[in-house]
Image (cartoon, rainbow, N blue to C red; front, side, top):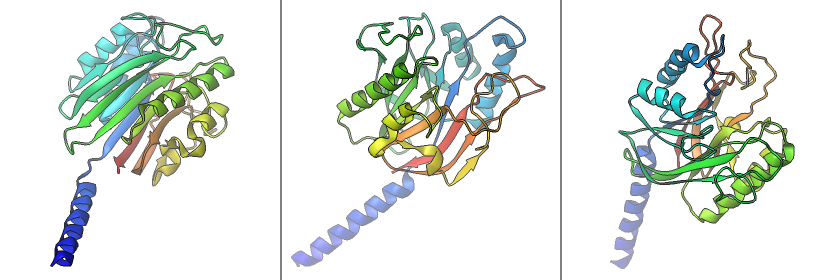
Length: 283
């Protein structure tokens, strides 16, 4: 009799786990360096704003992290995309400076907690910079609950330095240290403009070595526009395969597809970076 009950319990447990796996909702995750708002033509923000709106609506990410966006620029984007809410802080404190903003579908996701820290020897000091980089660098993160399947996960967004390799490496190392300190089994997504070519820079190695993070690009069953650089510089895209905008994952997932989105209209690019989007189901 005891064996009968144990067998029934094992069957029910296996069935429950299988159903949970089948019911897991797919996530469309995007990283997008918006290029800070400028009034200088031909790439002034007023000319680019409708194209940013169009590309995001076309690809319909569930969550996307932006880099370089200024406060007014992000308010414009929020007004253009009413289905999304966002969380962020200027890298110089308050509404000042560029943001590592996180936009999310307000009807699907509940932010349970969030925070910010700076990539420096004094991460809690607003606008701190101690590694020789003149641009302040930071991380914004949110712990979300997905209302579709009640799963929780972390979403981290960053922008590593563009000029100093040592600052990139120290930034990557600090992110790894801070992620470890969470001491969590929840999945963690890390997106950003890393200013480093994936698989060809020590900053990348720091984050993915020992399987700490996994790059969702090689995990994907389908990789679209893999030959293009993710940075375009407002020029026709180059086919060198230099991907500096990444979607990394700590945890397990089935990655259906990923894409460097080479959208433009009549020669106008929405930004000097292409967005990178990944469709995945967390396990």
